[in-house]
Image (cartoon, rainbow, N blue to C red; front, side, top):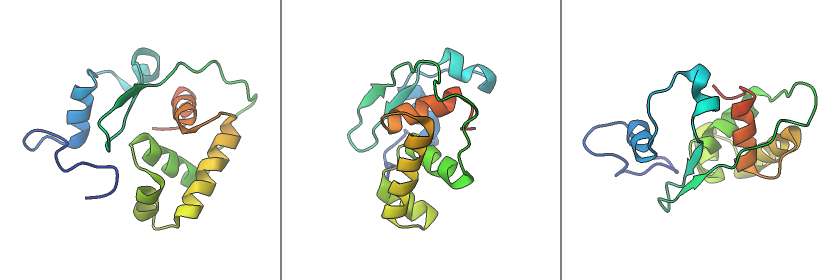
Length: 128
């Protein structure tokens, strides 16, 4: 199983995403309402810890943010709980390249870390 995923993620044959959604208390919400109505949380697959993501103030970077398709892929995998090593395996690129993409994302979004980047990208509709 790939890095970032647990073999015991769910009871029975339920997909890990469904199990995780239940564990986080997420209910069915339409995608258009998701960012505005759902409290975002980050689940650490390795330790089992759940961290709430802080509200991020309105984007102050000015203008539209343009992430490349590869940067979006990397950010989605970070959002899904993968570490740099797991992302490099998934995308078949070096860990160094993954870290370069992560740094570019942080710079483009003008945030301090990956958690803030995920939250802001969700708010801006960059992650589908």
